[in-house]
Length: 357
Image (cartoon, one colour):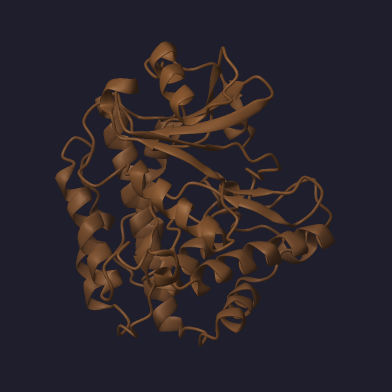
């Protein structure tokens, strides 16, 4: 997955007005060293992300994409708010610098944060580590998301960051509407079946609510270069208040997604690699958070729901690709994987009437 690693020259169609951006940065970074130099991160499928080099310092800029976007999507202002709050709680995030909602600066809303140096593992099996090191890194992954879910939103003024209760019902409605509204990206029979199946198979709402990341994967974390310490969790676009088990089982999709999809290692020899089994990883999280391990029936729902949601994101990427506003040069690969992911999502339900990808 090294095609996602590092930066490249700013791609055609994603250029930024250097002079206007520099003037804005000077107003928020009095010690800014000029001239600035821009490059574009290869990773990031939704919001274009840039590295700003200014003398011996570096920053990261995240912006909304240009062109037509789905209502409520690409809310970089929410990202800025949540990382600002989490920093106050001591949770590992990049330091927020400033938010700009004036479209006249670069053409869309954006924010700037500090560049956190460290190691990002684009391959979810964390290659180049020994089995012992890999075990420690997976334990840190587990502990970090458990710590996130333990934060009281009210303590960092995020109690209104999402609506309380009925998380799964609202999410199913949201992603169903987004999928159905994108006529250009087309329809898929497995997605249509899931839209009918999911509302009928939700676990009872236990009232659990916490700050959730929404896209918690190893490649959205920066580790220290020499150990399992998590220095920063990145990419908060899908964060909200929601059910912690929904967030954690999204993270656990890594066990069930094929290796050619982002974040998946299904079929890997976990014991040889030093990666905990799915059951042990789930148990460790539940012990850390004081939750009961979900039943098999509830797990079927959680995985079907999260793969449906992930497939809806791929479907949205397909739509942006067709409209010419996709943020990543790898968007076509993700769009091409959409039917397979939708079929895999339906397979989680245990039903026998799905359509193969």
